[in-house]
Image (cartoon, rainbow, N blue to C red; front, top):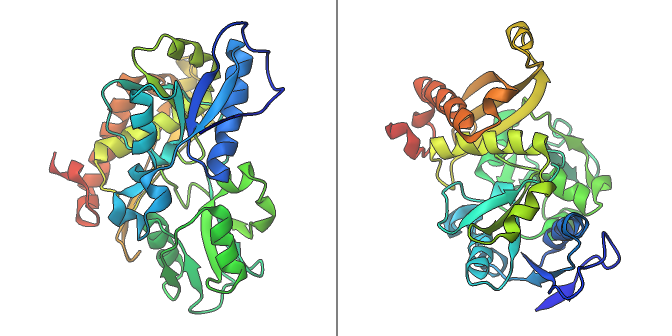
Length: 338
């Protein structure tokens, strides 16, 4: 089922050319994100764009996300539709995109990144420190569960499924005292007023690629070359570096791992070498109960991590440091066998 997206935005469609078909999940957040990408495609190519709504296993199956195959359950149906030619590109929340490559597909663009932080949404506006002892907090992410328990071991942290509004409604109805969600999603659908607290990303690293979008295309489709204009260089550097570390770790879907990269002023040596901007990366692996963690912080010159080879070298250094400090003893990390 298709419907026109964002009528009136961007440049008018090229005469005689069929609309570009953009595959998306059907949730409010997914269609909002995809609508922004559709507007950008119109502006960059002059082609009209229509959304092709696709139902994924993650939208219909119940139970803990990790037991269903992790965030990849939201991706497989979109990728299948793209490979079958039912759409010309698909939009993913990058944090949901598995790091293993898929033959015939590639990331064609990384648009401007939204805020990367996690946010607490509570029924009465209380911060994490203000929640009463034993408060019930909802999260379906093993990483967030571990981080919550590390900060407040007294909390009753319970799994939760559903879209953003469903989770917020469970707070309003008293089933949960609070939930932790991505600030990016809340911002994109206009729910910023529900945020009681945002967690500093350096102290509370998030999922690799959180806040970023990945526009995926077929490798043999020339149209994919036109999408490069949608890429934001800053978003590409940070999000793909985070993904490189996650891929190198080979973390299982239930592994509590936080990875966040941000831009910082370059060191004196980097500045003298002509690179005045650096990238600081924090990677932390947690025990599921939050009682222990292993954290690594490293900085790199921007130019050194702006291409795949440099990112892989940086990721190898970060993962080696994590494993040397015992991260493989805390979580299911296939990469610990290196």
